[in-house]
Length: 163
Image 1 (tube, rainbow, N blue to C red):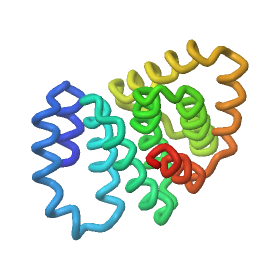
Image 2: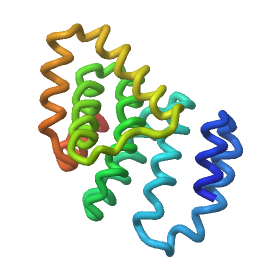
Image 3: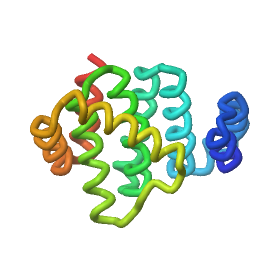
């Protein structure tokens, strides 16, 4: 069901994606924490697409605690995209740069990349707009800080943004 939700989201059918995720949840609750990560990630993207940045940030925070427990770098990579998009919706360009920096550091260490076009588009849009507003020097400083960041630091950033 999660895979079908991914396909529905990629095709732009957010209603169908939401329905499939709702249908998948009862079985996934008992399957273990890793199986909930894609659901949280897809729900965060749906929240961003609907302009609900606070909802997306809350979903990402929940996912980050699971990612931290599982030490799942691939899920971290994917989860940073809706977080960056949510930070962009909030107008926090420096946070967008730190998030993208943290994501790129994981990509450099693991070789993992975004495979879905709609995910790349979401990241590229957030990055392009934040870069333009920050300028090269401020972007570079915030991005470098993100590259040295950790999951715990991302959780703390979320907690600060939510308070």
